[in-house]
Image (cartoon, rainbow, N blue to C red):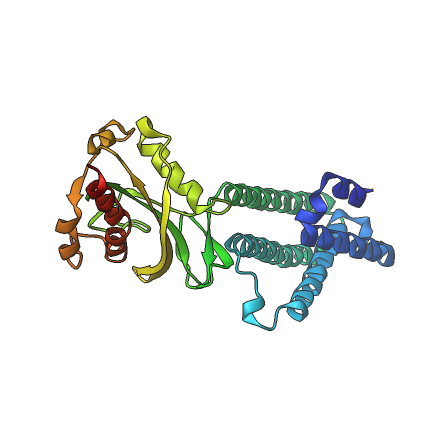
Length: 328
Protein backbone atom coordinates (compact mmCIF):
# COMPACT_ATOMS: atom_id res chain seq x y z
CA UNK A 1 0.00 0.00 0.00
CA UNK A 2 2.85 2.42 0.79
CA UNK A 3 4.48 1.80 -2.60
CA UNK A 4 1.17 2.34 -4.37
CA UNK A 5 0.67 5.60 -2.46
CA UNK A 6 4.18 6.81 -3.34
CA UNK A 7 3.59 5.95 -6.99
CA UNK A 8 0.23 7.75 -7.01
CA UNK A 9 1.82 10.91 -5.55
CA UNK A 10 4.53 10.86 -8.22
CA UNK A 11 7.40 10.42 -5.78
CA UNK A 12 8.60 7.10 -7.19
CA UNK A 13 10.08 8.57 -10.37
CA UNK A 14 11.81 11.37 -8.48
CA UNK A 15 13.28 9.29 -5.63
CA UNK A 16 13.53 5.87 -7.25
CA UNK A 17 16.82 4.91 -5.60
CA UNK A 18 15.70 6.08 -2.14
CA UNK A 19 12.35 4.29 -2.42
CA UNK A 20 14.06 1.14 -3.69
CA UNK A 21 16.51 1.09 -0.81
CA UNK A 22 13.71 1.73 1.69
CA UNK A 23 11.76 -1.25 0.31
CA UNK A 24 14.88 -3.46 0.53
CA UNK A 25 15.54 -2.34 4.12
CA UNK A 26 11.92 -3.11 5.08
CA UNK A 27 12.11 -6.59 3.54
CA UNK A 28 15.43 -7.41 5.22
CA UNK A 29 14.20 -6.07 8.55
CA UNK A 30 10.99 -8.09 8.39
CA UNK A 31 12.84 -11.29 7.51
CA UNK A 32 15.34 -10.76 10.32
CA UNK A 33 12.55 -10.20 12.86
CA UNK A 34 10.95 -13.46 11.80
CA UNK A 35 14.26 -15.36 11.83
CA UNK A 36 15.52 -13.97 15.17
CA UNK A 37 12.52 -13.63 17.48
CA UNK A 38 14.70 -13.59 20.62
CA UNK A 39 16.15 -10.22 19.65
CA UNK A 40 12.66 -8.76 19.42
CA UNK A 41 12.17 -8.92 23.17
CA UNK A 42 13.69 -5.45 23.64
CA UNK A 43 13.64 -2.26 21.52
CA UNK A 44 17.45 -2.28 21.36
CA UNK A 45 17.37 -5.63 19.58
CA UNK A 46 14.74 -4.40 17.11
CA UNK A 47 16.77 -1.27 16.43
CA UNK A 48 19.93 -3.31 15.96
CA UNK A 49 18.26 -5.49 13.34
CA UNK A 50 17.04 -2.36 11.53
CA UNK A 51 20.53 -0.86 11.47
CA UNK A 52 22.04 -4.12 10.20
CA UNK A 53 19.37 -4.25 7.48
CA UNK A 54 20.28 -0.72 6.39
CA UNK A 55 24.01 -1.53 6.23
CA UNK A 56 23.31 -4.64 4.14
CA UNK A 57 21.11 -2.63 1.76
CA UNK A 58 23.88 -0.02 1.44
CA UNK A 59 26.36 -2.71 0.44
CA UNK A 60 23.89 -4.10 -2.10
CA UNK A 61 23.31 -0.61 -3.53
CA UNK A 62 27.07 0.08 -3.66
CA UNK A 63 27.66 -3.20 -5.53
CA UNK A 64 24.86 -2.38 -7.96
CA UNK A 65 26.31 1.07 -8.69
CA UNK A 66 29.75 -0.42 -9.19
CA UNK A 67 28.59 -2.91 -11.83
CA UNK A 68 26.25 -0.46 -13.61
CA UNK A 69 28.65 2.50 -13.73
CA UNK A 70 29.49 3.74 -17.26
CA UNK A 71 32.79 2.37 -18.49
CA UNK A 72 33.41 5.41 -20.66
CA UNK A 73 33.82 8.74 -18.88
CA UNK A 74 32.11 10.49 -21.83
CA UNK A 75 28.92 8.53 -21.09
CA UNK A 76 28.65 9.95 -17.59
CA UNK A 77 26.02 12.59 -16.96
CA UNK A 78 27.44 16.06 -17.57
CA UNK A 79 24.46 17.82 -15.98
CA UNK A 80 25.66 19.93 -13.07
CA UNK A 81 22.31 19.66 -11.31
CA UNK A 82 22.43 15.86 -11.46
CA UNK A 83 26.00 15.80 -10.18
CA UNK A 84 25.15 18.06 -7.25
CA UNK A 85 22.09 16.02 -6.25
CA UNK A 86 24.03 12.77 -6.60
CA UNK A 87 26.85 14.10 -4.42
CA UNK A 88 24.37 15.27 -1.76
CA UNK A 89 22.59 11.89 -1.72
CA UNK A 90 25.89 10.04 -1.40
CA UNK A 91 26.88 12.31 1.47
CA UNK A 92 23.52 11.58 3.13
CA UNK A 93 24.08 7.83 2.73
CA UNK A 94 27.59 8.05 4.19
CA UNK A 95 26.27 9.92 7.24
CA UNK A 96 23.53 7.30 7.79
CA UNK A 97 26.01 4.44 7.37
CA UNK A 98 28.44 5.98 9.86
CA UNK A 99 25.61 6.57 12.34
CA UNK A 100 24.41 2.97 11.89
CA UNK A 101 27.86 1.59 12.70
CA UNK A 102 28.24 3.80 15.78
CA UNK A 103 24.71 3.00 16.96
CA UNK A 104 25.31 -0.73 16.54
CA UNK A 105 28.43 -0.45 18.68
CA UNK A 106 26.44 1.47 21.31
CA UNK A 107 23.72 -1.22 21.29
CA UNK A 108 26.26 -4.05 21.67
CA UNK A 109 27.88 -2.27 24.61
CA UNK A 110 24.48 -1.81 26.28
CA UNK A 111 23.47 -5.44 25.76
CA UNK A 112 26.85 -6.65 27.02
CA UNK A 113 27.28 -4.40 30.06
CA UNK A 114 23.78 -3.62 31.28
CA UNK A 115 22.08 -6.56 33.07
CA UNK A 116 18.43 -7.39 32.50
CA UNK A 117 17.56 -5.72 35.80
CA UNK A 118 18.59 -2.38 34.32
CA UNK A 119 15.70 -2.34 31.88
CA UNK A 120 15.12 1.37 32.47
CA UNK A 121 18.68 2.21 31.33
CA UNK A 122 18.22 0.10 28.21
CA UNK A 123 14.97 1.91 27.47
CA UNK A 124 16.69 5.29 27.81
CA UNK A 125 19.45 4.09 25.44
CA UNK A 126 16.80 2.99 22.94
CA UNK A 127 15.09 6.38 23.07
CA UNK A 128 18.42 8.17 22.59
CA UNK A 129 19.18 6.12 19.46
CA UNK A 130 15.70 6.80 18.08
CA UNK A 131 16.00 10.54 18.82
CA UNK A 132 19.44 10.85 17.20
CA UNK A 133 18.40 8.80 14.17
CA UNK A 134 15.23 10.81 13.69
CA UNK A 135 17.08 14.12 14.08
CA UNK A 136 19.82 13.20 11.60
CA UNK A 137 17.34 11.86 9.05
CA UNK A 138 15.08 14.92 9.37
CA UNK A 139 17.90 17.47 9.07
CA UNK A 140 19.51 15.75 6.10
CA UNK A 141 16.15 15.31 4.36
CA UNK A 142 15.40 19.00 4.80
CA UNK A 143 18.86 19.80 3.45
CA UNK A 144 18.22 17.68 0.33
CA UNK A 145 14.86 19.39 -0.19
CA UNK A 146 16.51 22.82 0.14
CA UNK A 147 19.26 21.92 -2.35
CA UNK A 148 16.70 20.55 -4.82
CA UNK A 149 14.50 23.66 -4.55
CA UNK A 150 17.47 25.96 -5.01
CA UNK A 151 18.62 24.05 -8.09
CA UNK A 152 15.13 24.23 -9.55
CA UNK A 153 15.19 28.04 -9.29
CA UNK A 154 18.70 28.24 -10.73
CA UNK A 155 19.12 29.75 -14.19
CA UNK A 156 21.13 27.48 -16.46
CA UNK A 157 23.44 28.23 -19.38
CA UNK A 158 23.77 25.52 -22.03
CA UNK A 159 27.23 24.24 -22.90
CA UNK A 160 27.75 23.89 -26.66
CA UNK A 161 30.34 22.30 -28.89
CA UNK A 162 31.77 23.94 -32.01
CA UNK A 163 28.77 22.67 -34.04
CA UNK A 164 26.30 24.50 -31.76
CA UNK A 165 25.06 21.24 -30.25
CA UNK A 166 24.16 21.26 -26.55
CA UNK A 167 26.40 18.89 -24.59
CA UNK A 168 25.65 20.04 -21.03
CA UNK A 169 24.78 23.04 -18.88
CA UNK A 170 26.18 25.14 -16.06
CA UNK A 171 24.49 27.41 -13.49
CA UNK A 172 24.60 31.14 -14.08
CA UNK A 173 26.05 31.62 -10.60
CA UNK A 174 29.22 29.79 -11.73
CA UNK A 175 29.46 30.27 -15.51
CA UNK A 176 32.48 28.12 -16.17
CA UNK A 177 32.86 24.95 -18.25
CA UNK A 178 35.83 23.07 -19.61
CA UNK A 179 33.66 20.84 -21.81
CA UNK A 180 32.57 23.38 -24.41
CA UNK A 181 31.51 26.93 -25.23
CA UNK A 182 29.06 29.12 -23.33
CA UNK A 183 26.67 31.15 -25.53
CA UNK A 184 26.64 34.95 -25.28
CA UNK A 185 24.25 37.42 -26.93
CA UNK A 186 25.60 40.87 -27.79
CA UNK A 187 23.76 43.87 -29.21
CA UNK A 188 25.57 46.84 -30.76
CA UNK A 189 23.70 50.13 -31.11
CA UNK A 190 24.52 52.23 -34.17
CA UNK A 191 23.44 55.56 -35.56
CA UNK A 192 24.81 57.09 -38.74
CA UNK A 193 28.55 56.36 -38.53
CA UNK A 194 28.78 55.91 -34.74
CA UNK A 195 28.49 53.12 -32.15
CA UNK A 196 27.47 53.46 -28.51
CA UNK A 197 30.05 52.23 -25.97
CA UNK A 198 30.28 52.34 -22.18
CA UNK A 199 33.10 51.71 -19.75
CA UNK A 200 32.36 48.26 -18.31
CA UNK A 201 31.85 48.30 -14.54
CA UNK A 202 31.88 44.52 -14.14
CA UNK A 203 34.77 42.43 -15.32
CA UNK A 204 33.06 39.09 -14.75
CA UNK A 205 31.99 37.04 -17.73
CA UNK A 206 30.36 37.62 -20.11
CA UNK A 207 31.45 41.24 -19.61
CA UNK A 208 35.08 42.24 -19.81
CA UNK A 209 37.13 45.31 -18.99
CA UNK A 210 37.36 48.28 -21.34
CA UNK A 211 34.90 50.17 -23.48
CA UNK A 212 32.21 47.88 -24.84
CA UNK A 213 28.53 47.72 -25.67
CA UNK A 214 26.47 47.54 -22.46
CA UNK A 215 23.96 45.23 -24.13
CA UNK A 216 25.36 41.79 -23.38
CA UNK A 217 23.85 38.75 -21.68
CA UNK A 218 24.16 34.98 -21.38
CA UNK A 219 21.94 32.89 -23.62
CA UNK A 220 20.12 30.91 -20.97
CA UNK A 221 18.42 27.56 -21.28
CA UNK A 222 15.07 27.66 -23.10
CA UNK A 223 15.71 31.05 -24.78
CA UNK A 224 16.55 31.96 -28.36
CA UNK A 225 19.26 34.50 -29.27
CA UNK A 226 16.70 36.78 -30.97
CA UNK A 227 14.56 36.75 -27.83
CA UNK A 228 17.47 37.75 -25.59
CA UNK A 229 18.50 40.53 -27.99
CA UNK A 230 14.94 41.90 -28.00
CA UNK A 231 14.86 41.84 -24.20
CA UNK A 232 18.08 43.87 -24.14
CA UNK A 233 16.39 46.49 -26.33
CA UNK A 234 13.21 46.56 -24.25
CA UNK A 235 15.20 46.87 -21.02
CA UNK A 236 17.09 50.00 -22.00
CA UNK A 237 15.17 51.67 -24.83
CA UNK A 238 11.81 52.40 -23.21
CA UNK A 239 10.78 54.95 -25.82
CA UNK A 240 11.47 52.82 -28.88
CA UNK A 241 10.23 49.36 -27.95
CA UNK A 242 9.25 48.70 -31.55
CA UNK A 243 12.89 48.52 -32.56
CA UNK A 244 13.92 44.98 -33.51
CA UNK A 245 17.39 43.47 -33.46
CA UNK A 246 19.13 42.40 -36.64
CA UNK A 247 21.30 39.32 -36.59
CA UNK A 248 24.77 40.03 -37.93
CA UNK A 249 27.33 37.44 -37.01
CA UNK A 250 28.08 34.29 -35.06
CA UNK A 251 31.67 33.70 -34.03
CA UNK A 252 33.83 32.03 -31.41
CA UNK A 253 35.81 33.88 -28.77
CA UNK A 254 37.86 32.92 -25.70
CA UNK A 255 38.02 35.23 -22.68
CA UNK A 256 39.77 34.48 -19.39
CA UNK A 257 40.31 30.91 -20.58
CA UNK A 258 36.57 30.32 -21.15
CA UNK A 259 35.52 29.46 -24.74
CA UNK A 260 32.45 31.46 -25.81
CA UNK A 261 29.95 31.21 -28.65
CA UNK A 262 28.92 34.79 -29.49
CA UNK A 263 25.72 35.83 -31.26
CA UNK A 264 26.04 39.40 -32.49
CA UNK A 265 23.00 41.60 -33.18
CA UNK A 266 22.65 45.27 -34.07
CA UNK A 267 19.93 47.88 -33.72
CA UNK A 268 19.97 51.18 -35.59
CA UNK A 269 18.69 54.41 -34.04
CA UNK A 270 17.68 57.31 -36.21
CA UNK A 271 18.85 59.97 -33.75
CA UNK A 272 21.55 59.55 -31.06
CA UNK A 273 19.42 61.59 -28.64
CA UNK A 274 16.87 58.76 -28.49
CA UNK A 275 19.21 56.82 -26.26
CA UNK A 276 18.82 59.47 -23.56
CA UNK A 277 15.25 58.32 -22.81
CA UNK A 278 16.21 54.79 -21.80
CA UNK A 279 15.23 53.22 -18.48
CA UNK A 280 18.77 53.18 -17.13
CA UNK A 281 20.96 56.29 -17.20
CA UNK A 282 23.55 56.46 -19.94
CA UNK A 283 27.13 56.15 -18.76
CA UNK A 284 28.91 56.09 -22.09
CA UNK A 285 28.98 58.03 -25.33
CA UNK A 286 28.72 57.70 -29.08
CA UNK A 287 32.03 56.86 -30.73
CA UNK A 288 32.74 57.58 -34.42
CA UNK A 289 33.66 54.26 -35.96
CA UNK A 290 36.76 55.68 -37.61
CA UNK A 291 38.10 56.67 -34.19
CA UNK A 292 37.54 53.23 -32.65
CA UNK A 293 38.81 50.90 -35.38
CA UNK A 294 42.50 52.02 -35.24
CA UNK A 295 42.51 51.61 -31.44
CA UNK A 296 41.00 48.12 -31.15
CA UNK A 297 44.34 46.62 -30.13
CA UNK A 298 44.51 48.85 -27.08
CA UNK A 299 43.39 47.64 -23.66
CA UNK A 300 40.85 50.45 -23.46
CA UNK A 301 38.48 48.43 -25.68
CA UNK A 302 36.90 45.04 -25.10
CA UNK A 303 38.34 42.09 -27.05
CA UNK A 304 34.90 41.37 -28.53
CA UNK A 305 35.11 44.52 -30.65
CA UNK A 306 38.15 43.28 -32.56
CA UNK A 307 35.96 40.71 -34.32
CA UNK A 308 32.80 42.78 -34.48
CA UNK A 309 33.63 46.31 -35.59
CA UNK A 310 35.37 45.41 -38.87
CA UNK A 311 32.37 43.31 -39.86
CA UNK A 312 29.98 45.99 -38.64
CA UNK A 313 31.81 48.63 -40.67
CA UNK A 314 31.57 46.55 -43.84
CA UNK A 315 27.86 45.77 -43.47
CA UNK A 316 25.55 47.98 -41.42
CA UNK A 317 27.56 51.21 -41.49
CA UNK A 318 28.44 50.77 -45.16
CA UNK A 319 24.76 50.28 -46.01
CA UNK A 320 23.90 53.41 -44.05
CA UNK A 321 26.49 55.47 -45.94
CA UNK A 322 25.20 54.17 -49.28
CA UNK A 323 21.63 55.10 -48.34
CA UNK A 324 22.74 58.56 -47.22
CA UNK A 325 24.69 59.19 -50.42
CA UNK A 326 21.80 58.11 -52.62
CA UNK A 327 19.40 60.56 -51.01
CA UNK A 328 19.12 64.00 -52.74
